[in-house]
Image 1: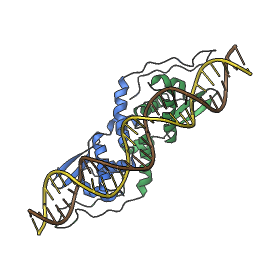
Image 2: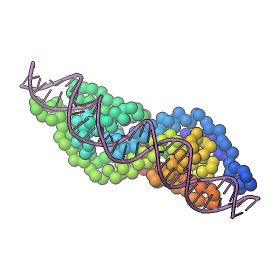
Image 3: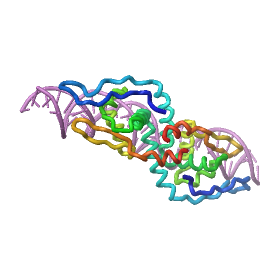
Length: 117
Length: 117
DNA sequence: GTATTACATCGACATACGTCAGTGTTATTG
DNA sequence: CAATAACACTGACGTATGTCGATGTAATAC
């Protein structure tokens, strides 16, 4: 997942010259960076990261009522975090009666994971 | 990298009963989540993610003056992003005369990368 | 010395974020 | 029907963020 991009070689600067030439920016990578940054941003909160951890570990679907006591935050705050994860495309939910079951969307983390490795 | 944590099994709720028992929260995972979330947060901006991408690709050290023309932002803004990456422990820099050279700290992304995979 | 270059820091701004108490919505219980 | 439970949404709050122009700092060129 590299940027298709060549950097100008470094060299001693002559008098009154800029140190480097401008480089063309490839739009190819831009949208991918936007997608991955969105995922990373959603994981950039310790509670959300642990939420994803729990959901991934329990490969099935987990009831919100089981998540609430795991964290020292109010229920609306947890609901807010789950919404953020939903908006980032990392998790999805299913209603069953009174309960809401959350699960990690398969391969949602794959692009970022591969770029990181 | 799992959370050491057991979830209460789901079951039909009897009249007037809560749907699940409270669960003990393990502090073991907490600090790891804080570290990984800090890294993820730093990667949660498309420009910073691309900065890391460029620096990783060019395994050596890259002059700031080569990074500026790659992005459509002012130089102080880029400096700000580099500072964020430094504070997150992802990159470090070296001064050489007028130039500053940035590089990715080896293994800085490893913990998050392994957790994601 | 002065001028110029590379980069960081400062101050300001609008926006986004994490958090909560309160409220609303929907489904189940009795 | 009314009461209760699970969860989402609203509005408010202080704080953090991304951005820029202006300024500061240190090194090189003349």
